[in-house]
Length: 370
Image 1 (cartoon, rainbow, N blue to C red):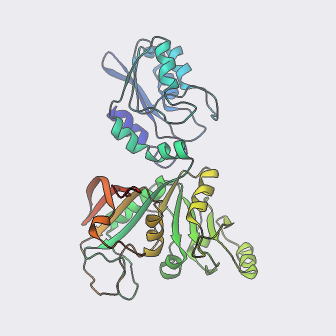
Image 2 (image 1 turned 120 degrees about the vertical axis):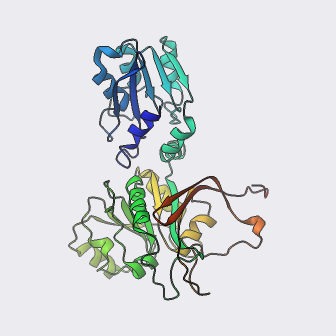
Image 3 (image 1 turned 45 degrees about the horizontal axis):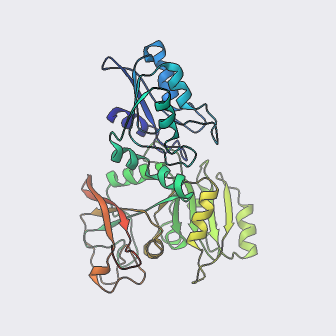
């Protein structure tokens, strides 16, 4: 199963909104074939591994980190359960069930009805973490949201002048680009565009570019912005509430190598783009995940509205000082330390000289309990 998970991860960022799936065929305690799902519309991992195994699959075991699909509904490939039964697999070991309503245990149930031995829950936690994006999107039709920022050891995301290049190390930047490749979309606010002029593409990791989203409620983005002029197959989206007609016309007339879209969205109570409306639209368009790289105001908005699922914080061993230097989260803040948000399932790793902390945001319940 460890091998199946490693195989699945090879398609990092290329299968959205499908899950990352690896499959290993084992006969007489020897691996006879293996495969992973490489792209939407391509063969599923189980079917491809069984095809490669050929006659050696009869009486063998199949290890797969995701429940095999059981129907054609919403799919472009034949059901994997049918392929498993035709191949004569004796036993299937599954890490986790598919929470998609159309499946949700049906694949496992059909295998058992056909006399195939099924073992569940092997490395289940690891399998769910690998496909945390798919699990949320399948159950809510809303994108999985990760908030990512880099800060100094004294908790600053920029110097007192606003300069923020570069806080983290080259190793951390490579990891940031790996994250971009995994997520369907990446988001910043107009303040980040005006200050840093980011490209928001994947350059330090081999993978696809995400859709680039700029929160720009009043259409202030400069026409020379790099995010409008990068060479990418993924579009740049201006998410706005009200944009001056002349600016909209100028944006549409730009001769750029990347597609450009303007999304008009409802305003929240402060006149800014409604983040809830934006996430709903992303889900409708099949964008299953969002990486938020915005500044302190954007980050605080996602946290205060309880819209962020996960946090990735890069801490660089640097000190900048200054009372006016910004910290990662703006907003109202909490009045008591007892009200501070906590992270669950925290992981700590090193990236060059930096420390990366990842965890899942645990919001207090309405009753005041954690």
